[in-house]
Length: 440
Image 1 (cartoon, rainbow, N blue to C red):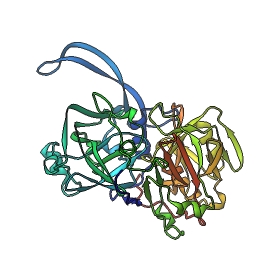
Image 2: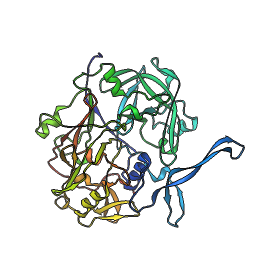
Image 3: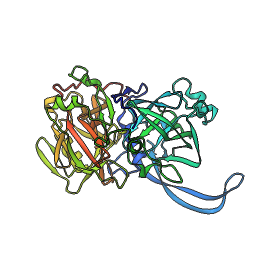
Image 4: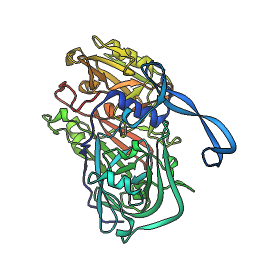
């Protein structure tokens, strides 16, 4: 077992992040490729894709087929492609991770909704590296004595608008929260579409289960899975935790601090909540996500029955996406709330006070956990309105509980026992100041 110097991994604010409801929603349409069920400019259409031998100016032979593609309706009724300007990498927080020997520090997006560990690398085209300038740390495998290439392996992440990231594969030492994982599989970016290259982070560290890792010929183990296999963390605490704070909480006792822990549960959030143990519910990892039962919700104490419903905890998502019936119940309880088809989301007046906002809860297993009222407002929506933090999941069959929900709890991701834990966070005040850094 490695020496244990476990400590909090403090999150740093994404300097490029500007809150935009529509852009965050489009990012999720891309990431999860669901079809919207409510009116708006974005939809899943079809685009012809032909496979065959390449001629000078066209594909020759092969087969043509229609593939789903995220598209956008313009004001004049025409249909166009979704561009990088329509969306943004949905990471409000970044986490420092040290890779290689000697170590370089990378600010990565910690994402429990994916399972790849990739970063900007010197294998990218010179134009991409030049454009990155000093805003990204670039991994150079030649400068790390512990790097080893994995011959014949590759990786590729593709989204619904056709954007992608791909490259080569190797292993190196990775240090997170006081733990060094030896021979961790890392994915070196060789090509990045604009949507990926324009992000503020230096890459992504996936914390979902390895069955959705994209490395071929076989999926690679995630850092936490390797912490367990290398006995870097105690067999009694094969887990990691997430405490996502907010600028809104700067005057609260915890100062709105955001952090992760690996290999232990931080006791401060439990003590603040007046509990000795988190509440746990079993996780279904068959789809690679942190998925659990969430068969009900409530709005001002009125139960919304959602028998058979499930949800995933996704730290790589800022919004919470739930079924349409639950959305309608939530916004029916907010004075002046309406669905704005031009922004493909629910909005409500920024003048609404905390006592006018409903108490909204979602079930984690058999226990309800409340969303902080201050997080019901996500971003400025113009015309005196704010874009709601809870929106429609379209035709998806499960909820995505992103930061809007996760900021309200201390979350425990327990791999060793295949369960998800939650502690209701105590916030004595609700700060309803207009969302910072918004862009419509």
